[in-house]
Image 1 (tube, one colour):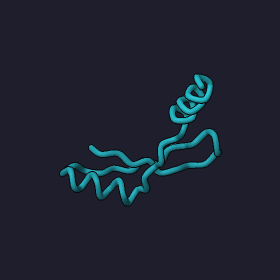
Image 2 (cartoon, one colour):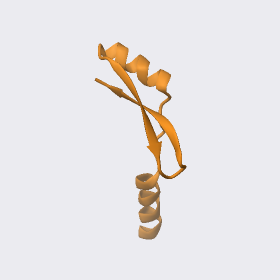
Image 3 (cartoon, helix red, strand yellow):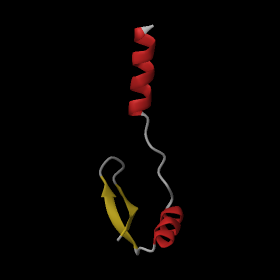
Image 4 (tube, one colour):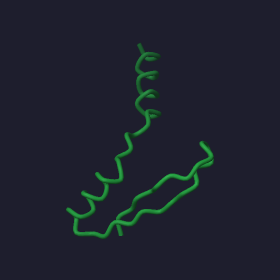
Length: 56
């Protein structure tokens, strides 16, 4: 029983959060009254550039 709970806890801890799209992030920023900025960031894992959004 303890092993099952331990495995479930590990699965919950290591599950990745769902990443929101740039459009969704921009909408949330505007609703909060902040400015939205995108940056082109190099992703070493895939070897290509991706857009990263942030509220300022």
